[in-house]
Image 1 (spheres, each protein chain N blue to C red):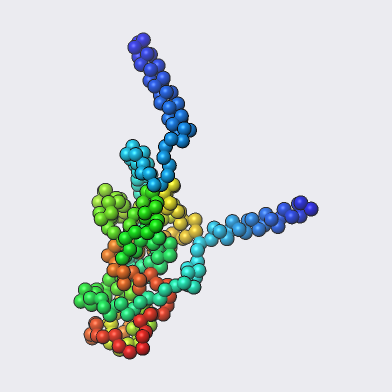
Image 2 (image 1 turned 30 degrees about the vertical axis):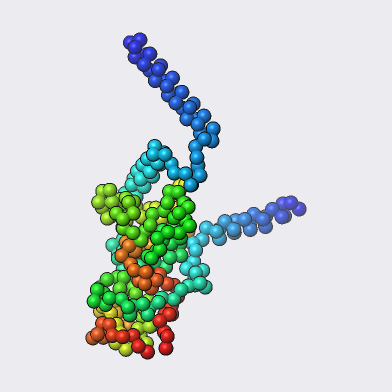
Amino acid sequence: MKRKLLSPVLVLAALGVTFSAQAHDPKEHMKDAENPNCAAMKDMDHSKMDMNDPVMQAMMKQCMKDMHHSDGDYSMSHEDASEDGQKKASDEQHSEHQH
Amino acid sequence: MPTLTAFIRSLLIATVIGLVGAGLFIYSGLYPIGADVPHNKLSYWLLETLRERSIARAASDIQIPSNLNTSDRLLAGGADYNDMCTSCHLKPGKNESDFTIGLYPSPPNLTATADAHGHEHGSDTGSEEIAIQRQFWIIKHGIKASGMPAWGPTHSDDRIWNMVAFLQRLPSLTPDQYQILTARGNTSDSHDH
């Protein structure tokens, strides 16, 4: 009887060790995930923005959906835009973000 | 020759007395081990030197990816940093937390440059490459008895490199830039129409 019980206990213990060793999945954080506050980009000093800077490119990617809702708000570097196939051309780099 | 023999004998006796004394001190429990009492200078120097020399040796062969400075790495590494590291290593606009106050040694504020918070980051040699190798190694392997866990067993090297990439830019980020880069949500909060 004891041996019969032992196997499932060992299996459960092994599974516990296996699961605890798995990487935390980014999806675990999605429940409480913040959304990017893209409105803050309006207040940034656009004259200091370098569209070839990976930080700027990353922010553009995060706010891509937001930018597509506005006309002429931001422009992206050609490099980054082609990367996503979502180039948004704009002559003015920082007009007011209006909807 | 008797002089040399006497010298060796004295040396052995002194060594034994020293070891017995150290053992008695350890077992006496007199050393304050609480995190709210700083190490004395000797203990601090010994532990820090041990740590720094060990990391420098172990990290020296690490190959740094050539594509470290990309937006994709910043986004992936930023989100992980925000989830896993901010409670100890802070984020722009935050100067302290319960962990930075209570942990000893206090975790470095990674939103500050290495010079600003007095932590070497390999900069004692002035090499950015060494600092990057060091960061990768520490994230992957952790540091014993410091509160820094080893993320290697549960995270791929590529994922750790993403965090290292983010750390290179973190000191220059504003709170707004940090929020945008680290947000995992895929809809913007800016739609107020």
